[in-house]
Length: 161
Image 1 (spheres, rainbow, N blue to C red):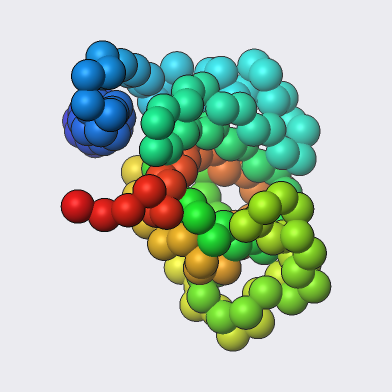
Image 2 (cartoon, helix red, strand yellow):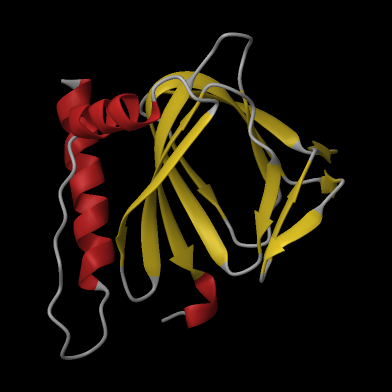
């Protein structure tokens, strides 16, 4: 039952995001099941420390599929908010505070070795996390752990309603 609610929520989120296209442009509806995304990450990523894929790009956002078998670097996106949907596994997310050892990796993007003074929250299958643009964040795993999640990266610089 929880899996069907999860799939319905993910489908609704994607449909709403896809409908936000510019005037006159046909909206695209993409549908991914939780099982499909997990199988895709397992097949393509195996047990590598990090697997990422961008399934689709839209006018003001894009999606990513990520599977981790190791801690992520700390990161901050000045333009993009992240909406994470945890598909499988567990870990923790550290948000806020300040980045440690940050270095620019692309325009408006920085990565670092950690976060100082942030808040930590557990991540479990079914969780949904919204991280506003400009907020440092890092995903950490227990030894031998793994996590697979779907990300909707929304361009917050595109303006608000």
